[in-house]
Length: 401
Image 1 (tube, rainbow, N blue to C red):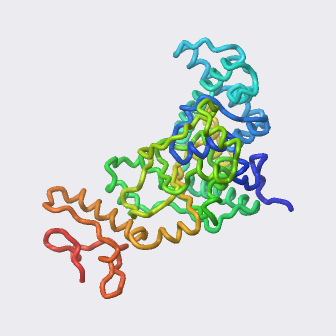
Image 2 (tube, rainbow, N blue to C red):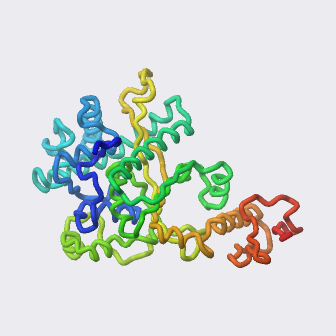
Image 3 (cartoon, one colour):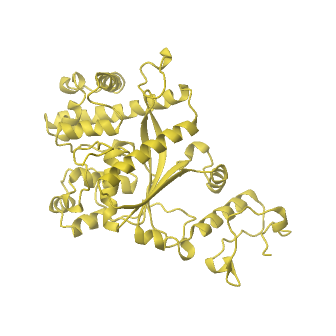
């Protein structure tokens, strides 16, 4: 059957848990924990086809001479930084590589010696940052609005999802939107760090998989087709749902089990029983469960805009768009809409926090209501609309009518 959306990765179909390899385990741990790829010390690409797929999900076409030239330019700037600023003695195999793709082979240990792997990883980390910095400068100079970028990004994501559905990924629900202005204001006022630059979820998408066991294969596919693992935003993951190590063990994945049990394995992300890293939204219900993370998703703009301004030369044609992703399974999604987990209560707790912060000097803090308190004579009260001055008592509390 002809597919309307061509996949990026050579392994395009659903990868069962029993076939996850070492790279897949590293990627899942990175995503679910909110770690940083800059702390990795090796890669696990096994073929040039996998490397080319990784470049394509980063919006770089290995079949395009201009894109390969751009890659070489970034490589040259990374070498200049390592040699001139940090005083590294980079071997010629890395510093003078004529095709930057060979760095991924060295970093994966399929080519060269251990020393080459070390310096290839240094080079790729710096190249990763250089590309990100250039994209931010490019975005600040282009005649395009945030709303227009959001439209382009939504179109890209929806296209990827169509491709996943064509390949029978068990997605039972998909939705996306841009956060409304009032929601942005509420979130900024509710948070202690109230800078708009720290808002990661202005553009957000939600996936519901059929089963809990389907979530990891879906997340892996998204990292291969949409949001490259190297641009997952560190420290922004909330995972109260998926234990990837346990799922792979239960699936009988021998290579993953052996890697997890071997203290000298080549995994970048170590096994841990420490749960202090787990982030949880303070306004969510006590039993609310989700996989939530943020990614800088690459978006190619030189194909939709004219780049005639000479000041844009050397910045490439790619920008990055912060996107929040939420992924749950069907059963969890249903449980998340019951009792104290209901979204209406989440919004109410959030608004109560905003009022508490705005009303500094109040003698008593506003207490977030329980689910039972939002029902009067069996009728659920409206908690979505903003309170008016007529709804407030003398001390600023909302009163029931």
